[in-house]
Length: 389
Image 1: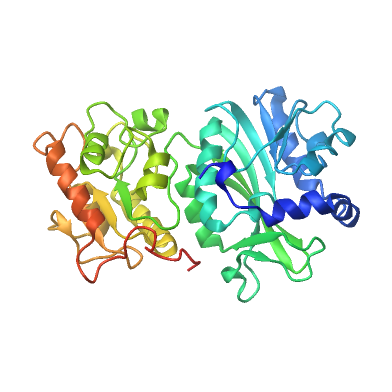
Image 2 (image 1 turned 90 degrees about the horizontal axis):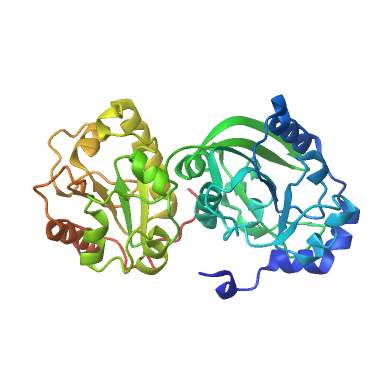
């Protein structure tokens, strides 16, 4: 869905209408921004272009490197940025559609900005951040922790007693946050915790890895799982990208995809998400250890329990057998589920697996998307509510 197609955002409307009231009631806390800024300037090195995502009135810009871009969705906030950073470039944009070229950013500061997104929108928002950051780039992500009883259920809800009524917030358990961050292609290098009234804030310092980010969200008809990204695919930013790989020809032949090598369109139009059993990119799948496959299976279990795709298609027998310990697992529907969702095991579409044709792979994809039968998943659009585990 494009920004123009999205419904009105009550949080954005609240900031537009009540910016001065909010600013007057909420003095800035700059300690974390100052520490992040110092880390970016350490050793006199240049990290490249830096952006403050959800900059508000620009409180944190003086703590960040000179030339940091101020980005916010609210015009009322951007109008107040010159009072704190007179020379800062100002950009009005949505966190889910960053207006930056691939690998054009060196670092991003995002203090309590992603907290205003529905949790189920965050994987794709982080996919976009991963796309815009260079490999090895740094991001600081501040979110609210689900520490109070019942707060793990709070997904994009009004906060009781909020000084700016109408805003929506999401809260995270540590396990779910780690699952999403790893799937988005980031490594957590530092984790800080601070009190925020009766709640807690986590600030994660993230490193952008040379890998693929998940394209996942609510209402998926099918979640397609590769074993792990090739270095070629990681650098291209598209799963199964190598010319000899038959995954995309098979997706097109199956009717699930309408465009070649376009994972966002595949998700948004076809209801097919993409992830990997192991996120680390390698030249060959044989470089992945059994322990990595087992750890990746646990992450997939959590992801599927949360987003509840209609079905899961795992592309590659060897990795599935290693991860599950089911050495005799064969192509087709499996006895084991992932997060309670049915699993279809299909051949690896790699060009090295020459005895499996594009037509064969397309047939497997159609079978997986159709579900295991009357007791299988609901049709696309009703696969699950995507509520928190």
